[in-house]
Length: 179
Image 1 (cartoon, rainbow, N blue to C red):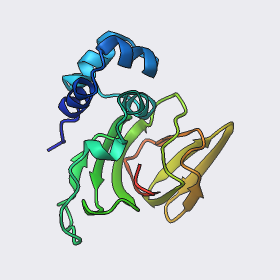
Image 2 (cartoon, rainbow, N blue to C red):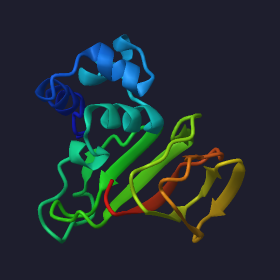
Image 3 (cartoon, rainbow, N blue to C red):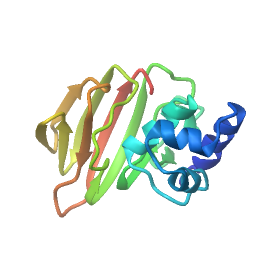
């Protein structure tokens, strides 16, 4: 089951005394979109989710309940919505880790982080393709990674990703420090 993120965003916004309009303006989004996000009625792009979190002063990783133990058995990762479309994402790193965040993603054909490039508040982003082909756009450059390929880059550099194939793919993401 996917973790609802909207109520956490709303609670943080209210605790900081921010209006929907202030958050929307700071994030470059509409009030209607932010309202729907707070009610879990939209699936945001990664860029939109990052922008809203920055507007309310929240780290993206704080939206999710990480597993409390160091061992996460197959299928036990907490399902999260890190943004994007047509992707199932599972948090594999334990809740007491702030130095690293590990995600396992299953991405449907055409699934993506969104058209808009985004940056994460982490120094290093590592991606390993477990199965299929992943396109990573890093600035103006497009990189196609196949099964067994890996890529490391600065998470703060504008980027996005997508599954360009007609088959589902699986990738492992490692972010450090956890955004």
